[in-house]
Length: 239
Image (cartoon, rainbow, N blue to C red; front, side, top):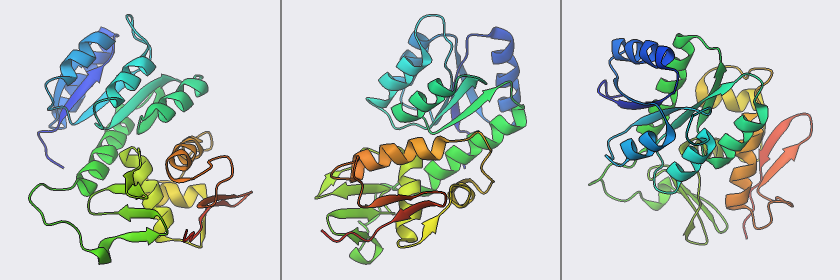
């Protein structure tokens, strides 16, 4: 991870924003603070933001709307800050393309760990300009579904699948373990290196988005199967 990573902090509480800005600066991040949604969207126009920390409670527009507008033009990692009881907002945020969430109140060290995790995933899977295209041996093919780890992309019948970086990582882990049932805890540990918290159902939300992208009929999935009480299985569909 580059120590000069530029973080856009979208937070309307001036005291919290000041504390987080100082804390992240001490961790060698460059921080731009936006106190409302419109300022955040304008800041994104510079094009050099590496990750966004986005509070959902903003004075001028809902943080979910900021996330929705952001995803129309950028795949920058988004870490949402939510009130502890706002489970619905967390689910909607993940469906709109946020990569992770952190309930308030939180420990700054946890925010830093989650921020570093989403930056690391993006860095590890970002395709570097100038490199030769990946060979066929590097591709995972399951019928019309093609998963390209080097380019961090998935395609159905040659058409790109709309997935966030985190959702692609989930799909890749499942495909690499095709035919095996992976529990939610196993998936979280493979992706983040940490156990799943009891209240964390974000995996399920991301799975629904992945199904929408890779299944012919998401309501009758054939590629990503839920095994009740056990987890998820990636089926080797060859059509």
